[in-house]
Structures are given as C-alpha cells and as structure tokens.
Length: 78
Image 1 (spheres, rainbow, N blue to C red):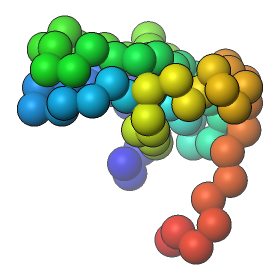
Image 2 (tube, rainbow, N blue to C red):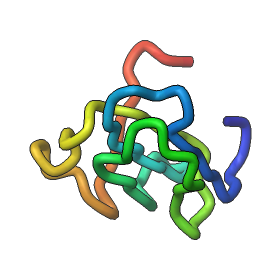
Image 3 (cartoon, rainbow, N blue to C red):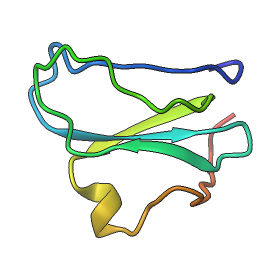
Image 4 (cartoon, rainbow, N blue to C red):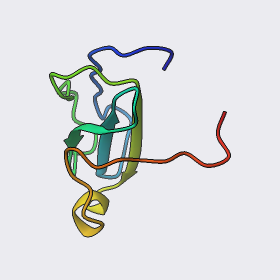
C-alpha cells in the first residue's frame, strides 16, 4: 500500500488457513494473524498502522520464528 494505515482483512473466498504478517513503513512486523480460519468473515488485523501485508501458509510464522519486531527485506520488488 502507499501509506501506513490500520488494515483489516477477512477470509471470505479463501479456502486454506493463512498467516497474515503486517509490516510498517520500515518493514518491521507490527502484527500477525496466525492460522486464520478459511471462509471466515471476521475482520482481522492489528491496532497498529501497517503499510505492507504478506500472506503466507498457515503456521509459517511460528515455524520460521517470525514475531512482533521481526524485520523483513524485499528483494526484486520496486
């Protein structure tokens, strides 16, 4: 996204559990929604502004030690 903002997402039309990783403008993790429930329409997201949201397979963040304060790097992305 172009700017920091409170972001919320649901799982409508998503058939697999996902982890949603919310990053601020410095690419620091400010929120994680783990193993979201497929097809659920509950709005989910942190109470902290995020600029980037990465969706990965459910369980990924725990398996790879991703937590609040972790940092991300984007390679090959403008």
